[in-house]
Image (cartoon, rainbow, N blue to C red; front, side):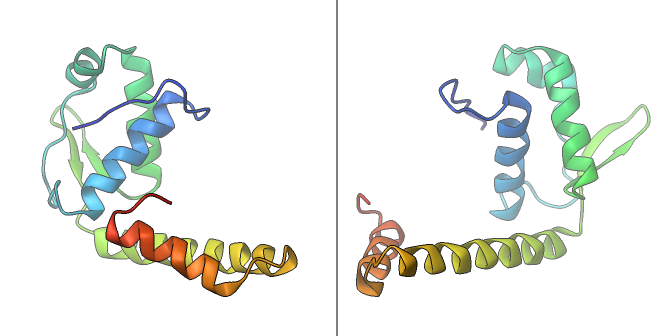
Length: 124
């Protein structure tokens, strides 16, 4: 379900939050699905429960999950809104990448070839 990369410079709690967000966006975690408890997920990943708690707090702030006192954390039903926000952010990043590539004289075809390789599963 969740794999951590200890070589990734991002904090572990951000990696966990990102992976859960990806699972929600992909539909692997449907709306109102109960997430593992903080303690249970911490044991599965062999990390501190405080790290999972921080991930869940970040996910709740971002609207990915909601919590019920004493019942646990659940996937929010507003993942369509989340998906739109993520899409908008990604397209904005892509615009900046295209501008940077233009400044570095990277041909448009090289960028589109790289993107096509990613979509088809080839090495970039």
